[in-house]
Amino acid sequence: MQIYKVGGAVRDRLLGRAVSDIDWLVVGATVEQMQAQGYRPVGADFPVFIHPKSGEEYALARTERKSGRGYGGFVFHASPEVTLEQDLIRRDLTINAMAEDEHGNLCDPYHGKVDLDKRILRHVSPAFAEDPLRVLRVARFAARYAPLGFTVAADTLELMRQISASGELQALTAERSWKEIERALMEDQPQVFIQVLRACDALKQLMPELDALFAAPLSEGEHTLAALQQAALHGQPLHVRWACLTQALGQAIKAVNQRFKAPRECQELALLVGEMQGHCQRAPELDAPTLLELLQKFDVYRRPQRLEDFIAACEMVARGRQALEGDGYPQGDYLRGAAAAAKAVDVKSLVDKGLTGQALGEALKTERLNALQAYTQAN
Ligand code: ATP
Ligand code: MG
Image (cartoon, rainbow, N blue to C red):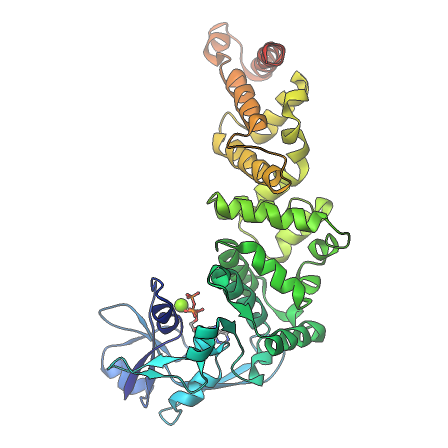
């Protein structure tokens, strides 16, 4: 059997980037031989094994053929006869279809190195169209390597357009799509992910609500991309970036959250930002009852971080609109001050007065309102 390093590890080493995980390809071996050498099978369906010591993934060379809609409709064929070239041709991009043998020699039958040097994301073969997830993957790689000057080859973009037009993107599971979206959002240029999806008409299929925002020049769509870019520039976490992406979708935020089964933290912040960002942008104009309602809604007494995430997302939106100068975000500071004023109300003294249950709740509310009244007058 021969063992090759494949995929991202080969690509990123040639690009001089840090290699996070290494994928290995085994040619000329049977499942039985692998197990006899101590490799542990990963699942029943895939011919993938875990190395007994390093814990890295070793896959048997395989071919695959589409047999129906969606990812379930794939037939894998792994056997010792499958060659390196046959395995590499089923991969998405030429820069992902290179292998390195044990002596460090590059095996590159589909000219990935040329494309790497030319900074081009190009599909390996027409079989690219068999898995619609590749549209999202290419958009994600475009986002990741945009700072290096990579662009999508014209004929690859055309193929992606055909996939979008076929309606096959609708067959993707929420889980597979979300994994790509999540990774794309965490790249340095996440807005490029959306731009590429839009360029091949996939955005219309995946998030028609967002696509519609690009209808007008200088549109909400452009503001959304700018907010997302700011979120990346400021190193914001995933849920803040997701909230930036969805902030202008209004009533549709819920549907988009659910369509991709976004994690709870992402869903929750997206809804709060969508509903309340107007309050944040004009925080200094809010009266005490409105401020109190906002703080209650955030449950800021028990979940202070949620208000911080909300403020962060609103700041990124404001920056995207170029509504801020310099480093600060006075609206956010104003909300923080209001939260501090409401939190400063001494619950213990009310309890010591013998108040309990509903009476305590009401007294607390009145005291907090008074504190916020004083705060709005003083600031
Ligand atoms: P990353 O740095 O994001 O992990 P990667 O290239 O290693 O990049 P993986 O998702 O780990 O990406 O996949 C490993 C390799 O498997 C890819 O380089 C590619 O050759 C192939 N691959 C993975 N998913 C697909 C797919 N849906 N279609 C075609 N080839 C794929
Ligand atoms: Mg990888």
